[in-house]
Length: 77
Image (cartoon, rainbow, N blue to C red):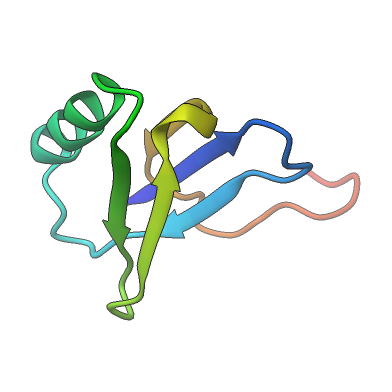
């Protein structure tokens, strides 16, 4: 599962590749709980067991989905 987080005042979004067995409902609940209080920190753990902390007060948006099979480069279809 792929998560992209837009961070206020950061030029690039944070992109985290979560474990393939990540449950969508549980992840959405975790995001909802964290965003409910400005003093919270959203913690995510990626496929390599690296942990990411994002202060909720700095979150602009969260996109949850599956990554594309291969990134597109150039002008091809």
